[in-house]
Length: 199
Image (cartoon, rainbow, N blue to C red; front, top):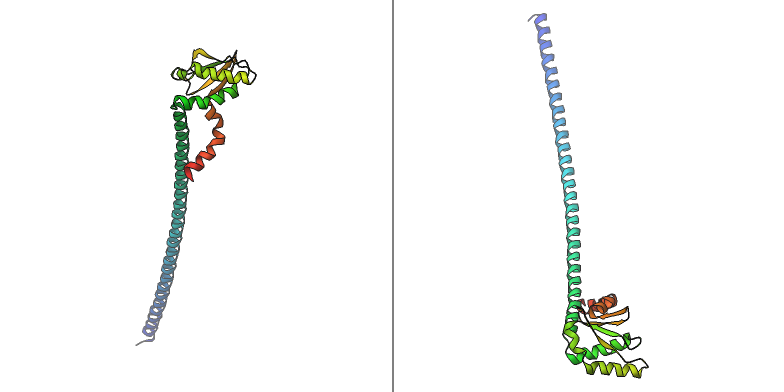
């Protein structure tokens, strides 16, 4: 083999070796790039998963908070309705009292409201029968004993009252209807009613 052929063979051999080394290096780099890509993808996947889990936990927490607030609101609304119903039932029961119980209830209320003893008592049409001559006579007798005129009268005027009465002296009226009295006392009565209902 001539020197030229040997040189040619050597160059070809070295070129082949160099090509092999370059190919190995390229494969190593490719493997490293692939490994880095897989590691980055895994890290991104894990970060996205962790972020999604955090968001899901936050959404769940918010949903639970909203549900708890709604539940509290519904409970509060139900309690308020029960209290309202209790006051409505109390008013209805006051309106359903029999003659004696009704007169026993109103007697001290009227005496406490009277200023002079010659006022008019305004009532609803369905409760006029409670204010008969005997009841008015008893009221006037007691008023005279207290040093007042003792000339209370049942007014000809009637009003759609829900129990109780309006006491009128000239242009001045004192509202002692059950509805008005319950409304005025509601703030002080409501805590006791709530305790009776919910404890």
